[in-house]
Image 1: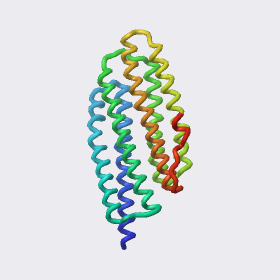
Image 2 (image 1 turned 180 degrees about the horizontal axis):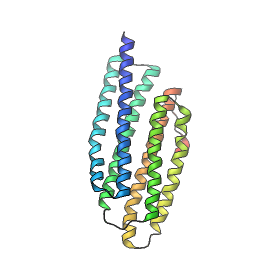
Image 3 (image 1 turned 60 degrees about the vertical axis):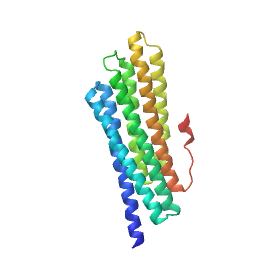
Length: 220
């Protein structure tokens, strides 16, 4: 009976993590849509998402504390509980990065936009959203191979980020460059979303193999 109850707690923890992930993905998509459409109301909605994401993170943190105190899990179960906590932290950070994108979009409202630069940011955002989805799915499925595929997706984001910076530095008008300088920070936030997705992928490998190793190419 004790094992059944413990497994139920683990299942609830995993479900809570995926639910947090769903809210975070809404925040990422909302932030990128707000940027594309210069939608101030949507920016405010994304900013409000942060409270829900934080609440879900603190709820998972409390559940983890209770499991560790009541059950004293070892081996595979302990790895899973710790990985869920780490993943929840990374998701909370993705939420913060989405909020920063929304705030910068609000601050940039009315400034002259650079079309090619905007397209590059949307490309980065699409890939970052895909990475978070892949990270969450690979964790749920304990699929290490799919988790490792995040490294290649991350490199694509990094390349686009470098292109965005080059475009800003070569911008013509001062107003165009002002928007572009703010977009460099947006691009950095998107890049960090990708990095957090890779971190979640590393936790998947930790749960499955019992050893923690960074996916080394992700630092390039």
